Length: 215
Image (cartoon, rainbow, N blue to C red; front, side):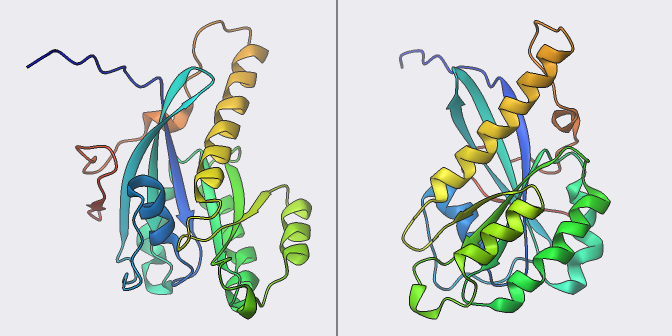
């Protein structure tokens, strides 16, 4: 068997998916990491995560994406998993006004539990259901702008803007990290604090989803 050289990962970024139950977080995760979608996906219990590596400006970035349960009864469990995250996709369902109204609460939870410098993107999912749209693009864009968030509308079902959303936030994390390293006068690779987090049950393979056990 010929020897295959595997390029090492330059950076590991932990990104969390948050938002109400049923907005499509798990399908966004599976679409990006495995290019899969399930109409029969069930609500996440606790936390699960998957990984995928991308290339950004010549560097290999491994994204470790955590899908936190949206149900209220799991909030005490999942709050511990914000620790070490450098990015967050704050997801709502464009057909459910309540899921957008609750974005403010999720944003507060992020600010309470996550690092102050976490990069946050507001994601309006299920853009394939334009005929049922209950949250206008203008309203969501205005909210994102007023809170210093980036914004995109996606559809995990038809794979619209899913790749763009994840690549955009990972690129922004890398850009900000590189900028901080330069400001500090360092010529070495920056090492975000988030890469020091202890991984529970790390996936053995790229794109493999795992359940994380509660500590």
